[in-house]
Image (cartoon, rainbow, N blue to C red; front, side, top):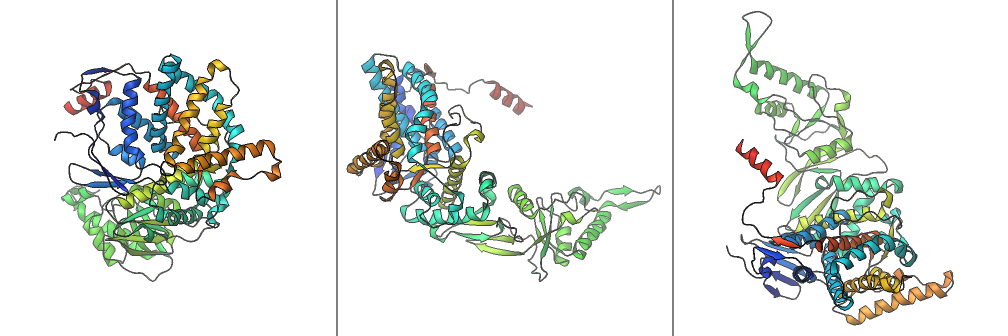
Length: 590
């Protein structure tokens, strides 16, 4: 099917795009030089796509696929990944943006917009100063790595506040609630932002009750997220709720046998009780020469002994990561043991962690450590699917629970769950100490900041960019190098301008409020200084992470510096002969 030019159809809140091909703008040449003009052109096309969905007043983007499926989203990563990118520059930019978002949970749209503004500002400065753009890019990155930390420490941190983990269970006016609300205002419908942030706070309060373990708990939730939520299609997001315990996304392999015994005893197995090759009718040679018994008969009697033993010790639930044979299921049914087979590894790992169970490896050596107690085990109907709901004995302070995430259309519930997971990543990045930040997994990700203490937040809506821009304009540097901080200062202001593009007067009010707070801090006594967050939050703005913003700036500068190191792009019609492709080809031939 032939590719088309980007087609834009505006509605009140939905912006529709057809397939996207930045290579359309490259003239179809086999080889092309890569200069600043090409970078400006490519980034400009990406900016036009994400700008429609940017900010609290942004709309949603509707993508149509060749199959006829539709995707409606405000998530920057989903929008960028849905584009059909043929040009290497566009793919490189999207890789950097999504890599930054994977680390911090947010910022993909801001990444593209800030990069577009920076590229345009550097182009203008290079023309006026008559210098090479790649030299300015290197100077910008070097300046930021050396000077950005102390500037943030002196100009931004005094206006920030620290979130306290105990605020999770506080009222909706707590800093954590405002931080989550500000995050969801850029990802979800405005009508549901507060309810979703409240739901996520309740969920986190069940899992993370101790302040000193908040980082490890957030990391655990992020790692086990696929097993912690259940998507339900056909209901609005306001129907989302918490369920005690864990939802196992499988149904019973045998008719459910309700037990009155309390507590419910369960075991976990990772191998078949009766191996499949035992059903082939082979014979087993015994100690007496010439005496044989059928192998299958031997194992059937062995399985009967195992199932009878499980029944004798009161086991009524068997969770298996593999499929069991019909003989095992029949014996379990007769013994009133509920069997759940083919459980996903993530869910089984979470179950074993919460119940402190040990998987059975030798069926002739089942010990007390293999048998765990549950408060209940019962089927639960969520949407059109029936799952298994289990609950664990109470162990303070953690109270395990699962999220039921609803969505009206196909893919909507998954997007809501993805937004919640990204919010958890953002909280983890905000809260964890910079010295323990994880190493970057992409070349476009900057090193961790050692000046920003954990838990620092600032009012959203452009306060970070305006404060940093003011600090850059007044930074004590030589006149010869003044062009570098001026470029960054001018580029940063693009984000608040885009946020208030529908209300230009609001942008001027924001600038005035920030400048007034800066002057008060310089001239007034500490007890008379006003709080910038309180002033701006009176407008209905939320909070945002200082550390995530810092990483955004450095990630954009790193990506921009790499883009300008490219000289040319060679378009090939055949697959490149890299070592990886050669090895894959050899494996296919074998």
